[in-house]
Amino acid sequence: MEASSKLTVIVDYEKCCGAGQCVMVAPKVFDQRDDGIVILLDAEPPAEQHAAVREAVAVCPGAAIRLSESA
Image (cartoon, rainbow, N blue to C red; front, side, top):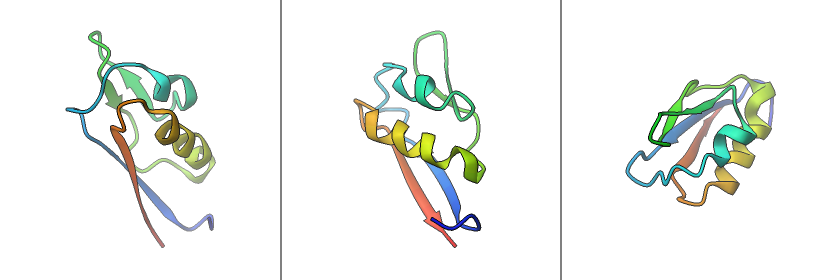
């Protein structure tokens, strides 16, 4: 991915099961509420966070996170 590409993180809060995998993988982008549900800290993370965000999407057991990319 080019550094100029924009990555947008989209969370489906209804699908979030509170496992916290996203927080462990990308703590600058995700956090959790007291009940475990994800909090999106940065919907358009900088390029240096893109790899971590992609990993968070891959490890999310509830498939609650998806990405949108644009140039």
